[in-house]
Each structure stands twice: as structure tokens, then as C-alpha cells.
Length: 429
Length: 109
Image 1 (cartoon, one colour):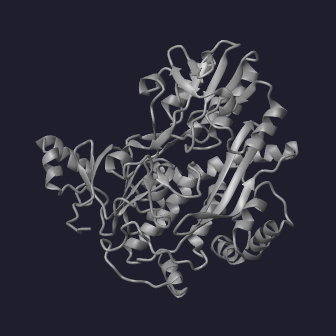
Image 2 (cartoon, helix red, strand yellow; image 1 turned 180 degrees about the horizontal axis):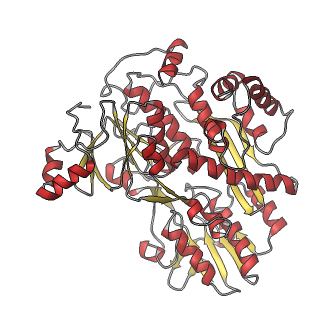
Image 3 (cartoon, one colour; image 1 turned 180 degrees about the vertical axis):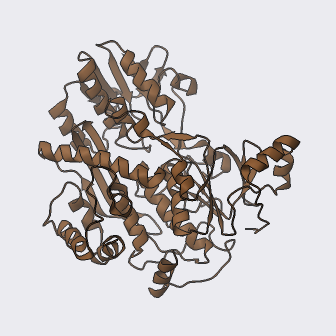
């Protein structure tokens, strides 16, 4: 990486100059427009301010206090997918699941609200939609997910029948539709095929919507038309549903039949054997790495980003690291907690590599995932993994056992809230 | 960070100096020294128990425990002598040496 001159011009000054002269593109082309935090430490740029990226930015600064860390994220506030289901169920409000970037700024991270449009790996820069470029010594990208549109369900259809598998306006739209639905209407959830973000998520969503319906629309029900024959925490969910609900029906893929098309305007799911009309339709498409990963060429032509399992450095582009749902991390689920865990290991590796250590120690990662079946009935799955060059090998963990008392389930529900409060504080607090 | 770098070096890890441009390329040579990096180990705990073990929510705070209390609690969860909701599933994932490293980093702060 060329250690070219450090430009101490602040972003505001830069934009002022650029705006005054109209020379944004000239700056970018000349390749000398380096905006960012002052100092002389190594420059780490993080793209994406979700669970992975925000954690990585904070922990690079924590492990390397003299490092200059820039986080680039277009949104000024972030609505999380974790706990969006309790929001749909009326258990938490939107404010609880919305986080700003002030805490990261206070932690010494230079936060830039802009959209990354491209990568110039040869020169070690990323370009922004404002026209500016940002230089890095190492880049960490946390792209999140994008959707494989199809079966008649595309982005326009998602504005009629929301997938709500990215937090924000989609989540709010789904809640509004649930509230507007007639009592007696059916909410149809179509979970995606593997692999996808948050494996237990569709089933917690069914639970939280069933809770809302039980309270507000007792004649309505949730129908899950699955594209799989089994799912995460299945035994624990099924036990919880049996104890708490009569308004959830899960139909496995073999029985549901292949979904042949989705008509968002009439809220109809067509399968090879039937047509199901919904009061509210929540079709969750199959998934791939977020758009920026494809733009940057980090997928190597596939759906996801192959990475070194120890450092999370891209197998395609050197000095660029990929974490979170978009990365192929063998053994770990695509979850917010896993992204947080990967980000910490990656942050450590990046600080080591930029401090002259060429051989990075493998690390332990963990994932704790709670789901609310009802507001007072929680279930969990947890795991600890040891990193190896090939994969993450499980050393401990498991699903919360069956047949537990109401107190045990109430404790797990409370700890779900505890997990959310602490992990979001760890990231954005 | 410096403290941990020294720890890593003291564990017998080969520390080679190189420029950032030479490092990487998508093929790390992993070093396994028993995963005793206490900063990273503890970073797993804080997602539920809070930074420094000071919880922001229902999960118990663990910042008041001294080193022996923390080792004893984790070893009891690991052996199954103590039952919680989730810790007896998590604790067996850690070696005794890792549990001691966690207690060294987190306890008595």
C-alpha cells in the first residue's frame, strides 16, 4: 500500500472546496483527495454501519488507539433486524431498535454519511457518491445482504408486500399492514431457502405476529409456507407454539409444494398445487451478499464473499476484509451476533497485520441468539467456535432444552432483552 | 494492544516484520497458541454481560466478581454443578486456561 501524503483537510472543508470549484471529479481522478481523521497511524476504512461494520470500526480503534478509523455509512440512524420481530409484536417500540452513530464518533471513529460507489484496490481507495475518494491501508467491508428477486417478486413488489428482512421502512410497513388487516385475515410468511440472514428469524416473526393477532385480531392466523423441511430451533419453537398458540400453521416445503409465483398486488402465493391469498403477505426472498460486495468484485462471481477464515481478508482482493452475513465463514450462522464476533476477530487481525505481525493467531468466536415465542417465553441457541484455517469448529453450545418451567422461559425472555441492550451498547453505545 | 502483542510474542509466536503491502493476500498462516488472547475472549462475554461486565439490561452484571469467584462460577457451569439458563451450555466451550485468561482480564476491574 502506498503511503502517500496525508491530507489533513477535514471533510467539511473538502466538500466546501469541492463544491465551490466544482472539482469533485478532478480531485477523485487525481487520486489525492484523502479525507479523514487526523494523525499518522495506519488508516482503516470500514464500509457499512450495521452489526459487523460498526463493531469493526469500534474495535479497530480499541485495539489500535493510534489508528485512524473511518466508518462510511449512508444512513444517519440504523434500525436493527434483531428485535424487529418484537417490534412487530408490539413488545418494543421503533426507538428501541434505532441507533445513531454518536457513540462511535465519541469512541474516536470518523463517521462519514455517504455511499461507497467503487473500489480501486490498486491505489487503495474507495470512491463515494459525493465524488470524493478515501484512502485506506486496509479496508473492512460489511455489506449485509441483497435479494435474489424472482418469481414475480422484485423491489417494486416489496413496496406493496414488504419482505422486512432489512430493518427500517420495510419493518414499519409490515407493522402498519398488520394493524390495518381485517380480523379474520391470514398473514402468510414465506421463509427463504438456505443460506439466509438470521435462520430462526422467520419463526420468531411468526411467533410475534401470532402474539399480536391473538391479542388484537383473534379470528386471524399465521400461515408459514416454507421452502425448507426443517428450520433452526425447530423443536423449541414447536414446543412454544403448542403451549401458547392455536393460530400458527407451519407447512413444510414438501407439503406446501414449490412456490411458482408471487403476486404482491393481490397478496397471493401460487404453488405448484395451490393458490394462497393473504391478508398480509410477507414473502422473504432468497439472498446474496449486499450490492457493494458485487460492485467491488468481492464475491468472485458467486453469491457470497470467500474470505480467509482467520483474518477475514478477501480471497479475491488483498488488503480488503469482508465480515458479516455477506462473508463465507464456515461453521458460523449469518446473524447479528456472529457479525459482531467476526468483526472483533477481524479488527484484531487488521491491527496485527498493520503493526507488522504477519502471522495472526486464530480466535474463539461465539454466537448467542434468543428468540421470543411470546413476550414472556424465550428460547435460545448458543455456540462457541474455535477458528481454524479451514473452518470454525464448535467447542460448546446448544439449544435451550425442552420441558423447562415457565420461570426458565421467562428468564430467557428477559435475557433476550438483556442481550439486545448489551450488544447494541457494545456496538453503538 | 501493546500488552497483548507482548503476550503473544512471549507465547513463542514468530513475529515477522513486514510492510502492510507484503502482508495478507487472503492466505493467513494461522498460529494456534491455545486461543489465550484475553481481549478477544472477553469480547465474547460483553455482548450479554456488558462492557467491562457492567450490564445495561436484565443480564447479570459480572464486574463485581473477583478472579477466584469468576473462575469458580465458570468452572461450575462447565462441570454442570451450577445450572443457569445458558451458561452451562457456553462454559464447556472454553478450556480451563481460557477461563483463567477471561477471569484475569475481566475480574476485579
